[in-house]
Image (cartoon, rainbow, N blue to C red; front, side, top):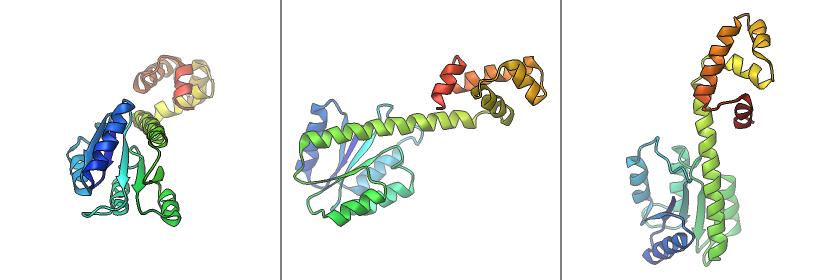
Length: 198
């Protein structure tokens, strides 16, 4: 999902059309307050599995894009929703500052439509990857400390008997832990587990 934030209706309409022409679902907001309200009403655990990205105008009357970006960043929203700035009044130092501060990219108006949408697609991919990493992290946090120990030894390529000997537990207990780990991590084999955690 592409979130478009611009105070000019004509820009919002044209960016929405542009996104839809590339099969990217988009929602447009007239300013910072509208986006923040939408983000606050959304279920914090809900997230578009295809990724999310925010196209953000720098100069808006209610709150500047830079101030909105700082607010979004302080709330942790930009980690899984990369921000691409748009401006008709940009300069190189402003762009450098925004990129150093964590913005995904910066485009000056008028911009090349294809280059912008290509970058949006890259941001959506980065968003998906961040979401997958968060999901893996959540699954890892669900493991008990003993399951983490067994997991580390599985990843080291050790067999159940060796794991049992190293941890001073029975092979049956290792098998139970192994089954719980695979279940919690949503994998069927040690190879899948290693690939997930590479």
